[in-house]
Image (cartoon, rainbow, N blue to C red; front, side):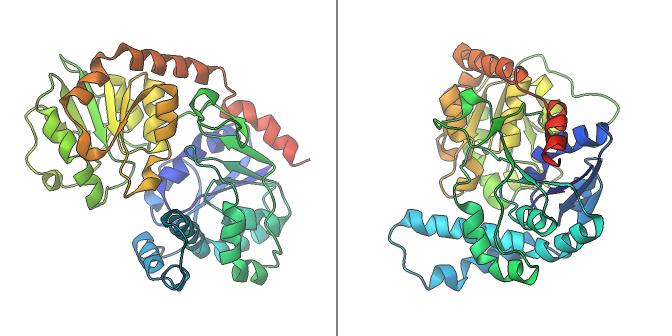
Length: 378
């Protein structure tokens, strides 16, 4: 069986697809991944990657959206309606550069199944073009609702050029979080165990060593963070100086001087896969990404999620963290020593994390799903 995996050009959206792609490869199936921009990081997953959007520049794409007539010339009844329209337009324009090359690929390679992350609507276009089933891998806890139909309306010209009249419904939807973390009465699809993949590479000559006192990791995601992510940690870094713990500042391979003077107990650790780093930690402070959230749970450490209302897309896991009790949620500027200390001292957070970790172990693994995916193609 040939399986095409589709992701938009964000590492945090590709990584949730990786364990399932590995499982299919291990079972003897052929796998290709369509991606763009961060191609070296994608290739480091060990999968074969097609650059489906040559020259893709996410900053340019999203910069153009802010002046798009679809937003600037229309009156919106509420700020929420405007925000939703902006999100749909963002998804559409993030997908547009992938359509042509992916359609060419499916015509040539002829996959039997398409698996796509929740915002990669072009995966549905590819499945429709080929006439094969599609499987959606959800991200965080946000609900798809009519996202693909609305995105398809923006991409109607692309669809017509490739003979796609309408977008199909996915044959299967895979939820990102276990049942206890879903803050909605009904799931969109089936639950699968998340096996966090937080990048791969050379670790040096040894694993990170635990220190003599508790360590808390600080991160803002999988790729080099933009300026606003640095600023989101300002209050956390200031509060860290008042806590009897060590802090590992994991922002990747950046110039850490942008963070300003660091307290004596805060050490930049450069690039280390988060799932590896967390084996030496007792807590995690992060930006709300799904990979960070689930990596903390699998490692058994409580977490503090920094929910910045200016960037709602980074907080899709906030409701899941709150409803399950595995961590705390606060605004970046409100972090203080008490919140950081709670990660180390609050046994309720640690027990809830252990309970959810045990729940994950009861769910089917990506390997368990492989026969089900094969059946979809028959």
